[in-house]
Length: 367
Image 1 (spheres, rainbow, N blue to C red):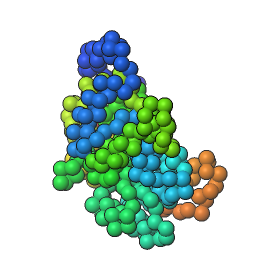
Image 2: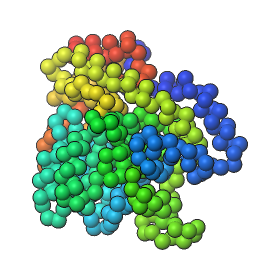
Image 3: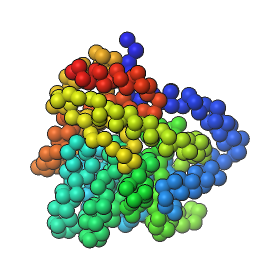
């Protein structure tokens, strides 16, 4: 039986092979391989796409989060607020920056940071230095409320846009242009994915951008002069920047095809044992299409038997991960913990066929 894949990078790259091959050959011949002209060109174009003034290319999305935190002044011992349902990425970045983490519960069904939980945290003493807001599964969090709460408390807002390239708020601003600074991942499965690892920090603040640029290269203020503490070697390769430049003009079209599939699922999966997310507009770019079911494991077994791949994103909450050694054992996040037991991603990628979508819908409705 041929399985309908959760994602297919082979299909995704197939139509671009000639263009990306040309780009790779040009980079190889150029003699510039790290932080060269192609990185500069991609940084300029991606900043313009996001609607901000500055983009700093780095090695991966987790580095982007860590360096963004440091660039807004998070120092060892500070507290960073973060949701606990996104596979430890934000939590790992905060801990790598030497910060303490304060977990905030999420909204039912969609899984983004709950503003009411953030409000309760901000009313405590001392307030966190920053909050990481993850646009989970490609859906913008409720940024108007979150930004108002954070501004009133003097808390920096770091957008985690690793799953939300191109998502657009009602006022037209894109993910990455809403908070003080934002991080992106260009891991191959992302809506805008390289052919290897890569990441970026975007911001409208020239000071934050300059600090991030120093931090990505050892904390240098001049060559071999390590001035800024917390720096690291985290640079975007020329060849990945070239790949991303080929793909960036296609991103909005890919997002639209993802969203059409996702909205069709939400409209046509009609099974009381499966909770689907709401139909959405441009604030959702369908990086993942995630349903909830109290019978998640049985649903997954059924889908496999029907030839449909699925996967839970994400099955373990950050505060329950074994690396903490039980440090957060007393923390209870009821929505987060329930969703970790119920979430399941269905196939959703730009190249999925109408026939495959129909098969996924039929399999879900027959569960």
